[in-house]
Image (cartoon, rainbow, N blue to C red; front, side, top):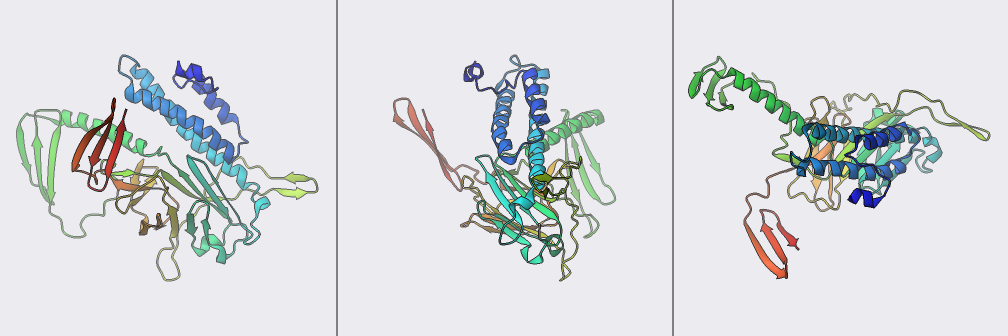
Length: 388
């Protein structure tokens, strides 16, 4: 009813015909620029929020399991389409970069921002080594490239979204994996209340089998140094959580540029979409790996109580990882963080989910008729919640 009264032209996300029509029409629109994508982004995020609210709050008798799966699929499709539209808008912008050359450097750079997103792009038109770094003054983000990239036809895009559409994918994958493990463990149970002591060649493993469907394993392995490969630094989202959104940092190939012929402007169109620049880090002159140095400014509405962890998104494993990130320098007063990357990644800044636990105290005071102030004193912060 509220949606009907709003009469704002947006689709009802719970009606498949409306949401499918909305996505289909937007998908067919190939000529949008970054500003138009940002305007549509506000609508898309609102639709996603409505569906997420339904999935969280609706009881089983209000929506069916089929509807839940359908809503979740709509969310994933809109998230994918939104990022696809940013790529299409970037491709359209890169076709005409020569029209926006900076008079001082001869390169092109711009920052476009709204309440949800900050879009920064730099295009290396002159390919001079002395212009291998750049700071987007309006955003506070910047980079320092290895010399090989500074001499290449490459564009650097830094897209910061205040929302995080990646971490839920990792959480969903972990939940599905846990469910599969539970099934396997149930099938493997051969007797109840049994205690098994197994001594493998590389150490001691204690296996406790319970009568429930869960199996608790406690392993204590004794290994010689160097016998075991270093485990990948996969982030446990139950311990560390992304705070402040996601930073998509990409090196992109330049498409053919527009050429002026009298009153005409002509450009070669390639049906390949936005292409990633094939950068593989070599070695710097001093023999170390040539890393890309990134500087990010922390949003004003974000507070880190400790030095944040920097993690990169692994699309193949659908998880956050901390390997591939080096030389982290955090400036709390300047609200900036600088680090090196072995390649171009999508990154997030993570904080310990439990750093404010245990809570020290709580108080509830009346402040008027049907009003109160609830105060929670935690390890690093005191939070006040006004209740009406």
